[in-house]
Length: 197
Length: 197
Image (cartoon, rainbow over all chains, first blue to last red; front, side, top):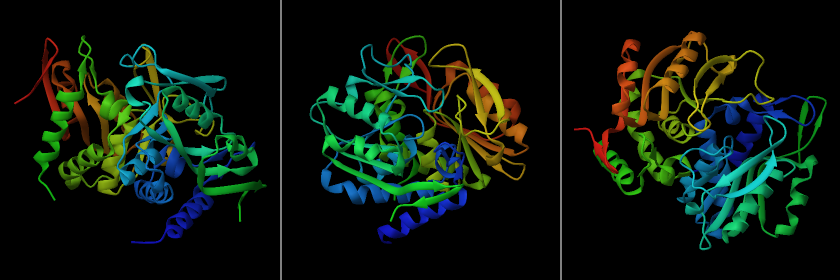
């Protein structure tokens, strides 16, 4: 096939060519992940998550709607495990007392409550969390909180893009698990994107 | 590989075994599509959409967040075209004047506004709409309205599950395009699910 660095080089190229820095630490990647999704890029991302986390023998992937679904599903296809996406609003079909945790809302401001039905996470599960961004890690911590409530084991955290300057990796250190980001942005310099390493 | 009916038989089995009829025409398929997603089933669904719509030479797939993303992405992987998901709330990153259309909200009641940025649909595009359910078709009509605003050609509509008794197919007839559902529910009889044919 190809080696891992090929896909990740491709991801960085896409970020450089199509990502738009809006200021205040906000990177718009609507062209390939957060509004329009490039399916082949997602397959590369899924392949790379699978490669890095295969040894963790996850039984479920957990993400949050909406933007986490595409990379999480791609990873689920490669690892052949089900993907659970936490809901941010309670549909008619959700069970009465889901696992819940709150996180800041990136779209609306304020707080959003993430909900996962008891049916889909249990004490037997080994859970890999996948999300689009690792920034402050507050959304990921909310997902980790839900995993803890369920009694499942959290075995890894994977993000497509890390904004290292927001400190999320440090905020996850106490969880003492494998954390992987496929592209790490060290900082923005004007409107230029500077990758780590 | 396999023939088309294998995947679609599998989909019907999953609906029968894991779908839960909640009354009032509401079918809960949280176990494999709307909260937990089975990635292999989604690949089968994507394969089948690709088989049925390949001749339409779509350049984009359009869906609505959240539950449409998984089947749309699977179809995009098989057809190798980008997937655009209409947003229901305006993230910071969305352009100022997106295409907009309103549809009833299934999760919250009331109306929801679907938004698509001008960047991702243009008059050159040939658009395939993919969604999880075809019921009253009001969400799909809102997506079709957005396609029309963009000047793109609407070349097909695909739904994973059709609830035939809600009349959505008739409501799409005037669009005069190919409409495909992978599993068609004729009615519910008590809590039993009765497929068409």
